[in-house]
Length: 611
Image 1 (cartoon, rainbow, N blue to C red):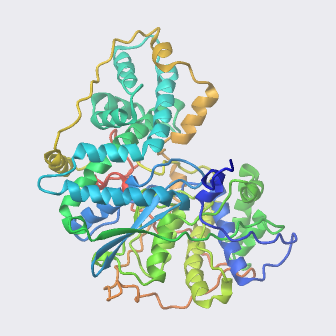
Image 2 (tube, rainbow, N blue to C red):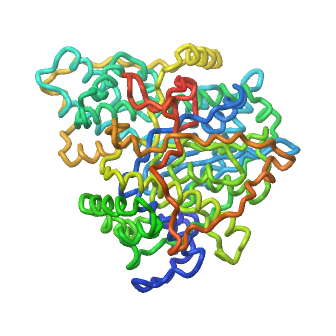
Image 3 (cartoon, rainbow, N blue to C red):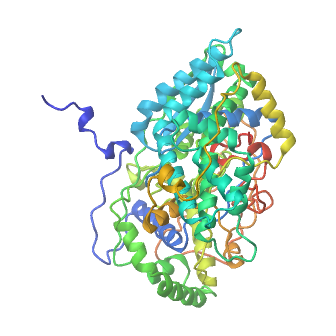
């Protein structure tokens, strides 16, 4: 029997279509095609900056809202996008984005994914969620909170199982390597508490994490994962505790996000209760061809294209580049990143939604040019939104570079003048920002940059009164109450705890891998901090017209700075802010995560209350 068409699908089908790779050029072939030259000039400084340090700053704060209604609506869309994601990990991590269009008959939720094939599961699931929200808001309700949570957890089971595996590894690492023998009373109680997370179903585990996120044991984990002021780096033990706290917070969010959706859905009944909201998918967007290195892909050649020959700081940049190349082997790493077999350019879902609205002159509902996403935007997406002529709301950002990021492909290149000039304007702005950060780091010869997770733990309580108010509202909405879980555990024997509950002691390699995959936000050196951009460009959106404001474009003509001979007019170190240092914190207190707006603590889902 011949295999089915479905069985023949490969992992490559998960990505949007790509253009055919460009033919390889000779080692010093001039880049004459304007579009290819623009793409090359974009990827060169981006690859350089990635080698200098993937993480370019702290998590940005959640965008400010004009009123609580807008804040609640945005949080609802962000959490709906979060619920649609069922996978975890990969070179292009799974993510979903939603744009809500206002039409005469109601609303349309435009759904996009980093992986086109995932939409086959996401779209029917989101339609089912909307139907169940309507049932939940009936009088009497036809769907309970417990049923809704169970539906969401069941859909996300592949993601939760990966998080569960990570949790088990971290529990094993802490028990086997993070505690001194013999156990103190506090350590014995901690081991007993950690073992309650083992051997649970996905639903039980998520409920347990949700119930324990503010417990005394969780506070102990937080304190032990907090670096001391005189520590210049995090020990392995500290990283394990930080990672454990992070993963418990992420598991708890599988309960918290559905609860917030139910809460915010009641506040926005008009979106659901009349049956006027529909879900449509954004057509997959092709990415640019995989760029190829050539004889000009060297640190010195890249620097020449970044700085004018008569620039007053050229000698300092050259000295800095030579120093960093010797320390970091920049040239070889850049070429290796181009040749990486896993390097497959991908147009991120929030960019797909933004361009879908822009190209089709769609009107965002409530004149709010906001694209919801399941997790914070990456470094490039944030710059893309900032530079976009439609002036959309800048997304929250984890400030990490994903080198496989791609702008949408222009099929006819520079011959499609309208699309080319549109992308030229955006990429030139991005190139300028990327070059500024790279040159600032090169000039000061900084090799160590801070690191943190894409998502945050989501259990901050920086605004207790507001959080408790939201918790009370959510509890009042519950039909059957919270599920009663048994947290009791037999007394731990310090000589047999590891073998009975963990099974084996992980090797050093396993512990190292798990640490690197989940270590959370670290404290950077003062010198590294000085190279992040430090002032914000906050432009208020113009008044929306009947097309939702898409007619109000920036009108100045773009200037092509991608020409080899022209270079860039870079001055001093970068000072354009991509985060607000007054509102972003990095584990400065025992209970702190990367957001300080109490009602918007979980950056991965766009500002849900820290419930």
